[in-house]
Amino acid sequence: MPLTELRFNAGVNRENTSLTNKGRWYAADKVRFRWGQPEKIGGWAYYTATQFLGVCRWLFNWITLVGNDYMAVGTNLKFYIEWGQGLYDITPLRTTFAAQANIFSFTASSASVKVTIAGHGASIGDFVTFSGVGGGPYAGITAAQLTGNFQVQSVIDVNNFTFNVSSTATATTANTGGAGTLDTIDVNTGEITTGPEITGAPFPDLINGLAISPKGVLFGINTSFGRATQANLITIETRTGKVTNVGALPNDTDALTFGTATVAKDMTSSIMEWRIPVLIALAIFAAVVIFVAMWSSKASR
Image (cartoon, rainbow, N blue to C red; front, side):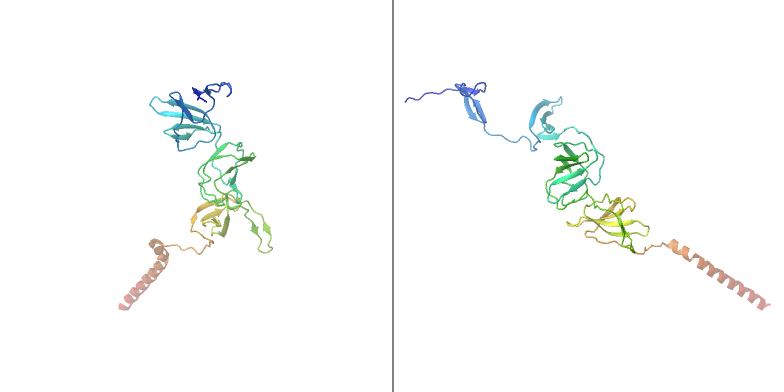
């Protein structure tokens, strides 16, 4: 049987079906045409080191009057500007909130973090950015893991939503900060009176070593219990339960006590204390001198 030469036009034609597209290429993948013949594309490389979020829907390239080459990248989730092979997120902010305290809650063995912000207005799929997160770790989650841009995974109600972090929590905790109430116990009857809720503690786990200073201020130790044990000195407002962080203590500090204050005295205060006794002694000495002088005078006559 003699060979039959097959000739195909260059390019891919999708206007017709594969059966009616006689003499033309109907489908191709990673192919280009050179001198009328199909040739595989020689490969590809990443243009940016940063991966954008979502599916790209739109690209727009322009050059400014000063020669800067920009490209706008729009996805179903974000809007970026590419410049110098770097991607910059310029997605407009829906709203911002002032600094919030004690907003994170964690569940043991879960990467989900619950956020409590009154009237947050977020929807599933929205993005939220947290900055300035300090202290920690919180239930095994570091402050760095809670800092950045996150996608909302669920909306519990108008005041609570969740997002995911890169690791799971080691404990279940309520809103970040040693929690509970500041209760009092009647030493005679053993009756417990529930006090105000404790808020604002730097670490989520433990407050211990409570001690009242001579001036009536309630001090305590707030520790990151169960991890590399960090400890902070705190004060607690007994009427409201508000915690104020004083500063870091040596790790593993467990107790506080207040002893008798030692006051350093300067030379001036020491002289002032001895002033009256010295004056009295000088007065007595002067009186003795005067008496002896008068007695000597009478004796000489």
